[in-house]
Length: 486
Image 1 (tube, rainbow, N blue to C red):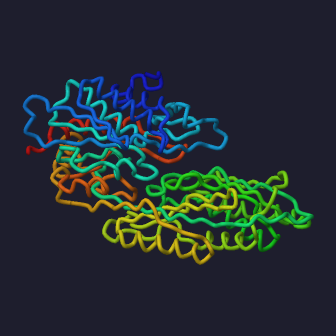
Image 2: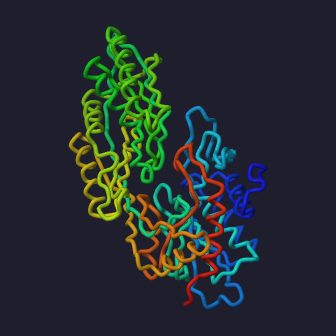
Image 3: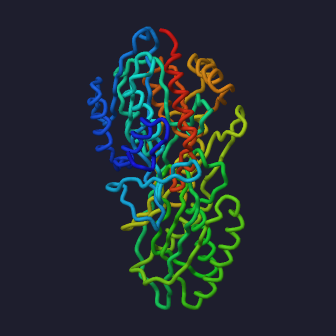
C-alpha cells in the first residue's frame, strides 16, 4: 500500500482504494478494473460473476446465525471521471492517480481523485475480505460506466441478483441518507459548417478561459460556479458585434456530466480592430471576475496572438451558434417544492467542440420529475434546432422515487442514532444514482444510498474527508449486523 495511506482507518478499505487508483479506469475503459474486481472475488474463494457488460458480482454467505436476515446488495461503480488541469501531464488510460493528504483530506495532484466511487467499492471489497464482521447474505455489485451512460446498470439482467436490500455506496455526505435521485437525459446537437477562406488583413488570436472550479453538473449546479462555455461564448458574441470577430475553432468543456472549467477558441479580427478587441477582453475579464469572485476566484481569461488558422467557420453558422448558446437553458431551472434547498430540475451545457466541418454540442438535463426533465430538454432541443442544428436525445434514465416508509431507512436511522447519538438527515440527491435504473429491474428492492464526505467530484479539486471514511465504515458495519430478518 502506498505510504500516503499508511495509518488511515479502516486499513482494509484504504488498501483497496490505493490498489484501485493504481489501475486506469476512466469511463468506457473499465476492462482492467473489471478484471481486478473479478480476480479479487475469486482470490477470496467467493462465488464471482462477470456479466457480458463487464459488471462484477461477488457473493459472500451469511456468518453463522445470520442466515435468516434479508440479503444485502452493496453497490458501487468501477469507473471514474477523467478530469485534469490543462497544465497537468497525466494520461488517464495509462497513468495511476497521484494522491496526497492535506488537512485531513485525500486529494490528487492535478486530476480527479476517483473517490467517486472507488471509496464505496473499496468499502464493499473490505466487507468481502473481512473475517470479523457479522452479517447476513451479501452480494457486491460493481458496475461499469456509471459516469457517461449508466451502461452497467442498464445492461444488468433482471434475476441475476438474489438480495432484498440495495445499499448504494455512491453518496457524498457522511451523516446523510439518500432515498431518491434525479433522472437525466442527454441532449446532443450537431452543426454542419462550411469552411471559409480568411479575408486579408486579419489578425489571429487564441482565447483561453481557465481557472474555474467546475464540478459535478448535478451536485454543484446550484453553487453559482461559472460555466466556461457560456463565458467564452458571451465574449465572442460581443466581440463579433463590436470588432468583427470570426471563429475558426472552439474546444470548450470535456465531459457531459461536469460543469465546464476550461474553454479555448481560435479567432480572427481585422487588424484595425485588434487593439479594441484586446481592450474588450480586458474589460470583460474584469467584469466577469467580479461576478464570480465568490465562487471562482481563480478565473483567467487570456487572449494571445497565435498563428493564422487555415479557415473559418462560415458566418451564418457562427452567428447561429453564438446566439443559441447565449439563450439555451443552463443552470438551475427549478427548486423542489417539497424539499427546501434541493434542486429539482437543471441543465448543463457541457461541451462545444468543432472539428472537420462539424460542431458537436453535448448537454445533460436532470430532474426528479420526469415530465420536467423532458420539458427542459425539449427547450434546449428547440433553441438549437431553430438555430439550424440537428438535435437528438440519448441516455434517458429514470429518477428514483423516495419511499419515506422504507424499512431499511428506519433501521439505519435507528442504528446511526444508537452509534453516533444523532439522527442522520434524509435527503434526495440531484444526481443520477444507479438506483433508479436498478430499482426498475428489481422492483421488490428496498433501496438506500450513503457514503463518506466527498467534495468537488468530477473536477481536479475532488477530495475525500479521511475522518468521514472511518465513520462511514463504522456505520456500514453496524448496518450489516442489524439487517432485518426475512
